[in-house]
Image 1 (cartoon, rainbow, N blue to C red):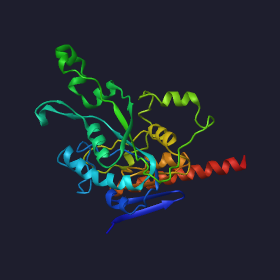
Image 2 (cartoon, helix red, strand yellow; image 1 turned 30 degrees about the vertical axis):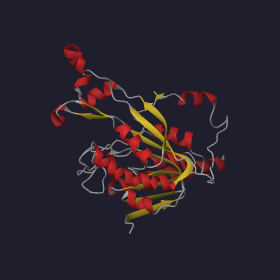
Image 3 (tube, rainbow, N blue to C red; image 1 turned 90 degrees about the horizontal axis):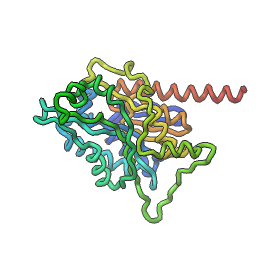
Image 4 (cartoon, rainbow, N blue to C red; image 1 turned 45 degrees about the horizontal axis):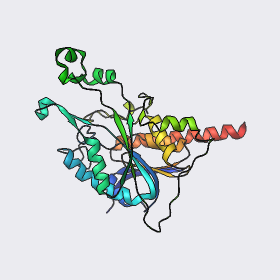
Length: 299
């Protein structure tokens, strides 16, 4: 039985409060034009005590096992020939907890999990992050100037983030709806910038307000995706009117952008507090669009 704790919908959008795997099982085959989401980074970020939270895992292998159940449904509901855009990054092993400090190739684990589910690894975008900001926030020894002067064999570069793209190839006889653009809506110079393997100018502060959605019971902080990062994915890899899907909706960032870009949106969020604010943010995006449309008509 599919359990949905709450459900809200509006003009061109719907949000579910529930387990993303269970809810996805109830969505129609070949109905999603583009998936854009940031999954839990294994056990790095845990947002609540629920056993349904994929961040509540003992290790990366356990997370991937749980994540694979979602990928089975994601492959089924994604339209043939379309893409899933997954935000992730390398994870850090700390000496005090792992015995030896170093990095874990979490993006590689994500890639292999998608390939086992039937997807083809299509592309990777590196999202530049400021190492000074990371050093100030995390105090990572490998980024400290003092460490460089003491023994630079322990020094490392700052951690970039990635958007991994996965394609669901069409089977013989399946209809494929291409994603098309014109020179007017996607100029050549914009493509030349966005075709870069490194996106240098993503504004790290361009996010929805997360503080209002935080709970005292949150174990770790929430980091919503940057709106301009989502916008690039939506405009590059979907058509107006397509359904943009996020199984980890958070406070609704993907839906907020999707609606403003003329797409539809379907999102799933497990945590009730985040779900409520996602509904508010997605609804607010819709209201802004309605007001803009009214102003155009008056003008």
